[in-house]
Length: 251
Image (cartoon, rainbow, N blue to C red; front, side, top):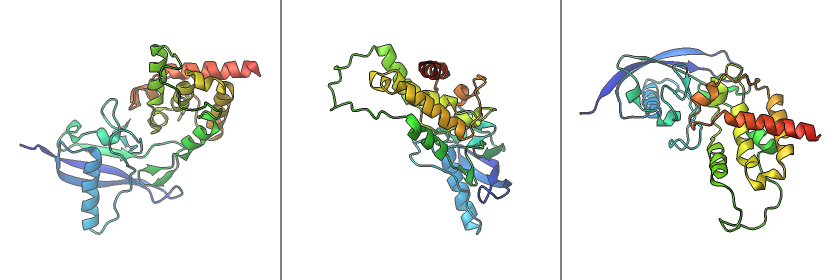
């Protein structure tokens, strides 16, 4: 028999970046514990629309843990009270009947609120554009075995590349630092031969853009790694620091 729960939701409502926001309280009943968190919000919005109220604005796209758009701060945790998952992968079985659930947008000066639970994460796009790509000619598509790369190195690069740019690391950090995101994007290229040609320029450009956009400094508390839905290691931050210092020494 399907189990259902009743919840009290404290949802952050904010018209736009300049408006003063605040929490609104809603009740949702008979929520299936097999449903996802976003499906629960869909139920809430259907309820609000039927009552003639404005629905809650929240971001989503793939709902498969790939795109990173479903970025919500739930009960004090980015993506909610579960490990290594995005909000869309969070199921209502993680909550108890009668529980009060607090839902907020990411809190960062670099991620201004667009509306309600949606924030503008264009800052990450700017960091990527500053240097998170390979612009040198790599020729045609080579055979898979044409460039020998030790498996441990390939695995590290793939682990870094699994970052989906959701911003949970920024939301979790007391300083609002983007170092985990930037280090993952630097690492995925720095570890591979194709990324070495521009390694120095990339590290300097991405760090400079991160600082320009107002992200905080990293103090190695490790909260970013714990809350990251893809388990990106803070070892990448050490690699970014090495890449950056090496580039500065070459200058």
